[in-house]
Every structure is written in C-alpha cells, then in structure tokens.
Image (cartoon, rainbow, N blue to C red):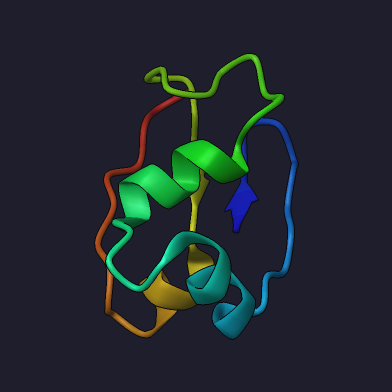
Length: 66
C-alpha cells in the first residue's frame, strides 16, 4: 500500500492480512484500516492505494488531482 500524497507506504503479507481481517474484507475497508494515523484518511485527500493491484489490472482506482 502506498500514498503519493503523504509518502506513506508499507508492504503487507497477503496471508497475514487474510488471517487478521478475513478473506471477505473489501479493499476500500482495508485501505481505511491501514491508513489509520493519517490526517487525510477517509477523505478525498487520501490517495492510499494498492499499487501491485493497479499494476496487475486487478483493481482500478480513481486518481485525485492535487
């Protein structure tokens, strides 16, 4: 997960995420949880995304203009 706006980023183990949050969690909810501590979390200013999913064309997210 990364955010181009605040330069936060992290690498997460898929199996650990599934174990902790369950396989049914939606990416939107997971993004909200992983962005805890960011002042922009849950707002239009939050640009947190999953770049590996975007690269693989598995997930499409809107990009917000700065």
